[in-house]
Image (tube, rainbow, N blue to C red; front, side, top):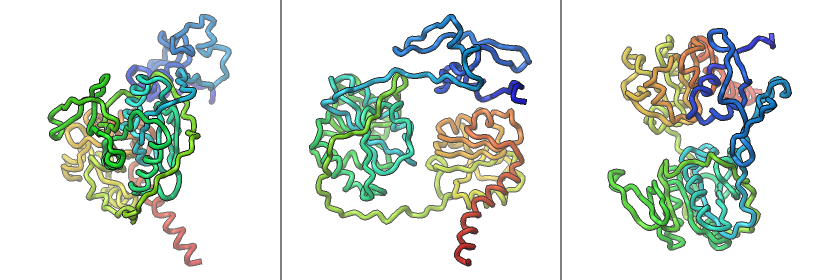
Length: 411
């Protein structure tokens, strides 16, 4: 059975889409020929050659780079980007990413892309990323981090702007910093950047979306006007301020210099997060969405599963038009554009308007009976089966830890 060729619809779709971020790796990993949808063998004319150490495409006419004969069965070729090194940095561009959920967001990667552009303007300058608390990110090198400083002390956990500001102040006294870059967001970067500028008495620019030479452009008037001003040391950057790093990778070496935190007067105490009803969260701000489509037959089970999982409810246009969900819960280009970190689509086939509305979601999970629908092709994880059975299984799994704790207490 292992010799039977099997198709991967998502890999084929990525191979046809040259703008997809995984296009290069998918085409590089493809064999010189594969079985097409009509049963004919196809060849990839763009798969010839490989990327050399200098980022230039080379052609190996012996065929070894194409994986014919010499490569072990099942082995894939990974595209190795050129390595950017800063041996002995004398100055730094300091970036403090938000790291929502412990991982770099698209906003963080845009900020790191601009940091690399600013670092190239100065000799012996590296990009230093300062991370507070534990993280789950493994792609700092690909995002453009030359040096990485992780502050894992408990006093930096949660909402601790005064403690974090004291560490930034100590960092400013220990190294030479050309610029401080933070995302201008509600996740902490905007507040911390303003506190930093006030503490160090440095000029600050907010909502920066463009930087050219010594001139920057900021958004003003609620995003209706552009304001040009000279480049300043502290930059609070808007989304899409620069292109993320994609043409090379950095070292992401640990920052080994000793940094002493300045004395901090603790006037704020973090009492933890306030429990919020997921149904009261707007779709545009929700991070975990359970969305229903025409494939839902048991709506009571769907609502109970969303409640137990702590997910915000969403719906496709068909489900809304049929009266199963209110209009403000509609997801898509004709409804609400969502940016959830996890989006679970149950019984949604994937119309183009719906796929546009979830384009910025981090992880998409699709539950559907049709393995060939567009939502399955878009999803990062697909579950083929009846929605009622899968939702009932999710319902039971979500309740299982609480049941086990009750049994342990009873024992």
